[in-house]
Image 1 (cartoon, rainbow, N blue to C red):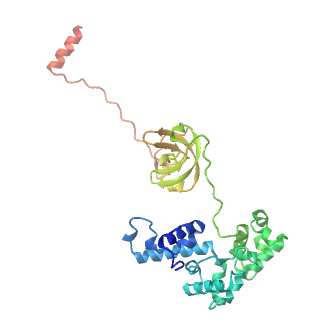
Image 2 (tube, rainbow, N blue to C red):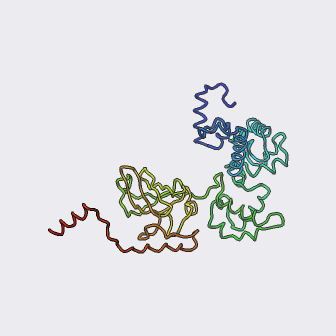
Image 3 (cartoon, rainbow, N blue to C red):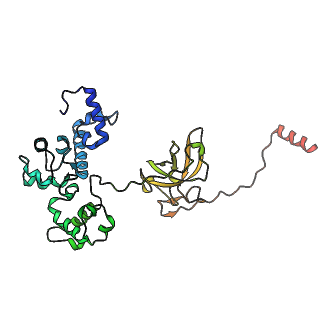
Length: 338
């Protein structure tokens, strides 16, 4: 629809390039059947697959927000309060009058009334607009509370946004009024701390050891940092920077009995591990997260609550004389003579 006269291979190249620029904005245009997420994708009910994908995309779009001046019609259509027709109206207004300077300009769009504005405004972002709060998730209705917070700090809004130390020093209860309660004030403070379209917290990565780049560089007893890549019933796989994940067996995940590996770790966790054994030929690395010197198998337990009494060792029976045949008796007699 955007490039009807362009060759299909060039359209594909544009789509791939846009996925690097803004993945969410481009991926929402692709139908579920064309995403290609696995060989069994076409075996499931296509209607239910489409509905499930729509729900996930809608959640993602409304959590991250949309740049009002660059978003396409398919992306705007996923915003709460908007639909396909209002999305097309916003695009037409933007093409005719230029970029939106503020969220309030949305009220000039044909067929977009106050009710739709109330629902969608908080999910639409305008970076570098006339109102700094338009670039955040703070709804226009709550701008008054945000400005009270800024006034309490005695600073310019643009310099305050992103300053977590100054914002955390404030008491949110001071800004509660008859219209906005404590949860809303806390949400506003959190958004001012980290404004923008990325709601994720800080990303922590593992620091790989210098000089340990290959499985041959590993030695038993080494303490390393790694990232959990996968968790299975029998343990967790950890990337320690040698191009081959190591396995922390479920019995080596903690200094206590662990019934399920998911209780201790999840994919993406940064953990400290100790190298237990290396099999270079089979490319297998055994790791442990237990304290050094606390090796071995954990004591058997009953549901992890109390030790299970061990079975008594079998008593040794007195040895019985072995029954000998004629050949055995002759051999014994010969040995005695020697």
